[in-house]
Image (cartoon, rainbow, N blue to C red; front, side):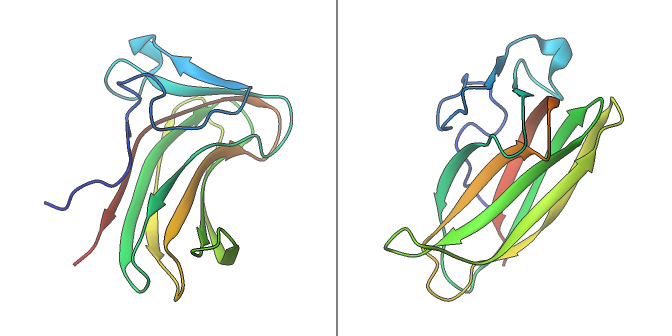
Length: 143
């Protein structure tokens, strides 16, 4: 089984490994988590208030990305943006989205690190105001 590249992917270690937007926090109520004892809670006042982490990648490698998003309204995003050795962002962004239904929605896709990429930014965000939860994220290289 491939090693997951995300640090603290289920927020079981608080928010370690993630850079939090001021509108985001750990929700340590297990009833609010998809699984385990915690989830990231974003109380967005506007669009694009991301909590994120950078993960090293290998150009040309394909990765599987997945996670869970919950909200009562609005659209939650797991966004991937490539950057080069000089921290310049480039290439198409990958957005995995889930519309708010009140229940957990699974999102998944594949990301191919473009030529010149050395890291990918993984951002958990929304397209507008509302309350969003993110949990059980995964980024793994595919054979």
